[in-house]
Length: 360
Image 1 (tube, rainbow, N blue to C red):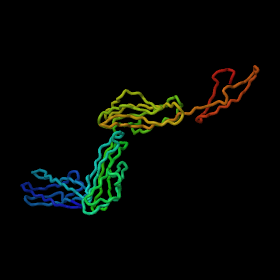
Image 2 (cartoon, one colour):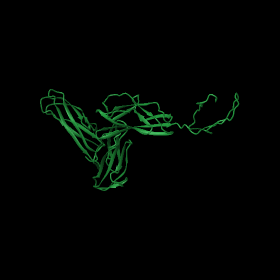
Image 3 (cartoon, rainbow, N blue to C red):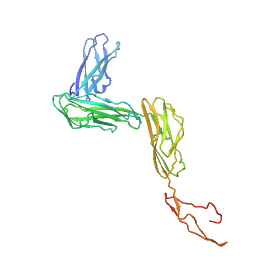
Image 4 (cartoon, rainbow, N blue to C red):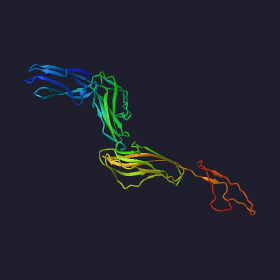
């Protein structure tokens, strides 16, 4: 059917046996929501035809599939199944009526996105202009398959234009839905409406103690050469298969517990928290990452936690290297002024004499 978005057809049901009685009509199958049947109950007499009307209301294009089922509420008790198949076309013929994109795994290095082509063919005898394309969810993107074939453009009769529809991997387990809407001078209702669906799956979960996702840790100020308090995290499998953590890497200034790899994680099983610490070797800001790596179904999965800390700049300077008092009479005192300059971070200073009981 071309251009038609609302149509009806008649189904005739006849009892050719001696069963008689009432039958129930029901629409089932993938696209059952696009069809209705009226009435949905018929009372049959032998060899007396009864009719019902099936109505289709559709704005999507492509193959529409459903099934009309006739249930007998009598002693015969059999079910008649009538396939319903339509190929709905518009002025533009689309290579896909719906785009189902591959499952993406969060953190997969080899496959950060899934992509499929969508080709539009002008099946009319007049040129058709494509003005624009709109998507709502930012996880989906589109681009022309051939560089330079940007919109707006005109497709001649019998000509075609191909775009690439892409879904980028998210950062959590989620099924993404959207509708690609193409605006053109196609005269048919529903032209340019293509449902999109794709799934993103977490393989390795890094969690806080409360079970929420952790993506960063802050350690605050620490003196060079000293070690911070711990920051904890948990790891867990996000899939129904066992997975193994191969390595845990840290950037300069940060470290964690030493493990024997691989660390095997069983599905639906929790593990005790482990820790990360900060040990600066210099003054100033530190930023870095902790990278936890595993492999799953051909993917190298890298989960990252952003780390930051600060090495305190301790830099006090005296204005003289030695304090000279000269000769001091026994029982008398002498005083010398000493200046201390703080060339580092603002800090509270305390001073004491390490040697010498006569000095205070």
